[in-house]
Image 1: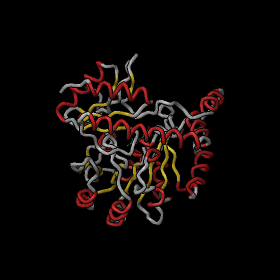
Image 2 (image 1 turned 45 degrees about the horizontal axis):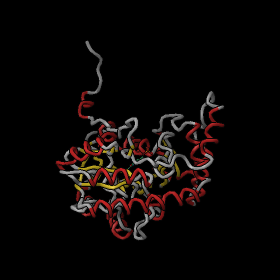
Image 3 (image 1 turned 90 degrees about the vertical axis):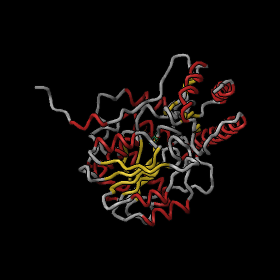
Image 4 (image 1 turned 90 degrees about the horizontal axis):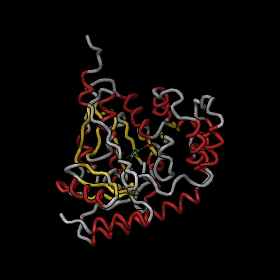
Length: 351
Ligand SMILES: *Cc1c(COP(=O)(O)O)cnc(C)c1O
């Protein structure tokens, strides 16, 4: 007899990570090229001297600092092993069988279908619009009494589009109050559109809305694994109950705290990346590519069937991008010289 693993694991799609290729420029995982913020390396080095001790299981100091920053009680903040862990925790805390539905746009963050399946729940997807934006009307229409969680990714990964405040407020007002809405704001710090909402404002006065953010992207801590959720106490408490004990490690806690002390540098960095994003997009438009409007640190080229050929051409030019075969290519904004290398590759591409 062989061991009995879950039969439904066969349906589980694998997470495809951006490739690292020695000698090539990596624009595949939405990391920032600039590295950790000032002071972070030293803080982590010091914290490393204590790694024989377990981390603070309650992530106390970081939770306090975040709560203060957003003007909420500490009971309304949960820290996780990356915000992807918090996404999984919310599904585990709300769903317990295939009748429970998790609704999200598609294409969107590739972890959503995976974590939904891990929890044994049923994914329900709503296609993005022709402009590659979330279709909130259709998402609202797809909510059923079984919908436990709705993921609203803004800016959306991988298309880059952002929602506007008024449309998102209308949507939130229309969602049943017993359905949890996750505002996945992993790229919030790169947004420059003044009509884009700050999720922290939208969750005030709503008992079913949570904002999730991460230190992986703008803060440059993808390898440390730390993200956070801010929302109603009842949901935050549920998130904490299903957390793997000690999963936010000591180095990650120290790195996040030090990063929050470098707010000025963070702002400068994000402004530079946003400027580069707009430059890369215009460059691509000038070359004749279709490019979705982006408010994140990446751009989306909806290349359809030619996505793989474009990917291979970039790779031959030593630029690693993230390709969703048959759909499109997502290109992270790096440093200006890295972006120039990508633009040069795009320029020499012949479909
Ligand atoms: C990167 C990303 C996250 C979180 O990443 P972590 O590294 O787990 O914090 C969450 N949502 C989206 C849409 C992302 O792109």
